[in-house]
Image (cartoon, rainbow, N blue to C red; front, side, top):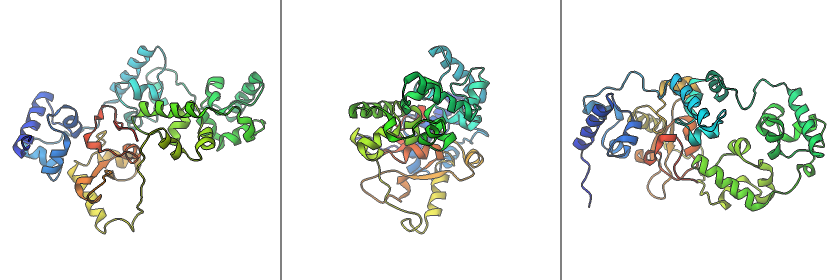
Length: 341
């Protein structure tokens, strides 16, 4: 039977980390470099600040991830590696950082790419008329209406750009003077091809892809998934993802002291996301709301026990909310869940 990890062991490990890193360790440092996971600290101390105090350490004035210069240099490094402008998928899959800090420090991915002196893959300032003409040109080239999954290669504009500008792919096609009918979506995509692409996206993100991710990074639009499986959820489950199903609504299904519990969890976790390390002040500035408190999926015990609650930023919560895994036990070097749903 393994020896119990004592409070003294945890404090000594914080002191060792501080000496090795030459700074006060963060919760991310603990998860990535410490002998023990973050969980025993969460169990032993009321908050991560309390653990630091026990080791005679104080939180650094600013622990908010990589600097803007470091983020830009990472884009340039990856561009040199792939011999071209990296996409968000490239960065999440092969880059030094995930794309999340780029949205924290810049006005989106394309803004960061431009500041790294590279040409974005997709222009955001393109006129609606130019987008529609590109659709017409693609139809002329093919001799038929283009498929959603073909449009990026044919026009250089993502399918999601058309959806964002015109409200839907169907509306964009109608405004371009194309038939706009379901029949014009073309050939039926093979069921196995659809499932293979879901598995590919699952490997990229480390979890079940969301509908926006499918629209932006998938080889097929959501339409053939709805045709073949009725719902995207059915498609994901057929592809082997185990999706967590929320079965509670706010506020009726939550304990009466939920807001107090949530505050205690945030304090325990050092008022920062346990995955990416985003602090409460930065989260308020970025999203205009408090850090989220996430229920870790469990098959037994009270889901509202403090040990089953964890602090996440809005972005990380959107990923982990669908995963039956504990964010505190994951390898957080890429800010994505390690086990797919």
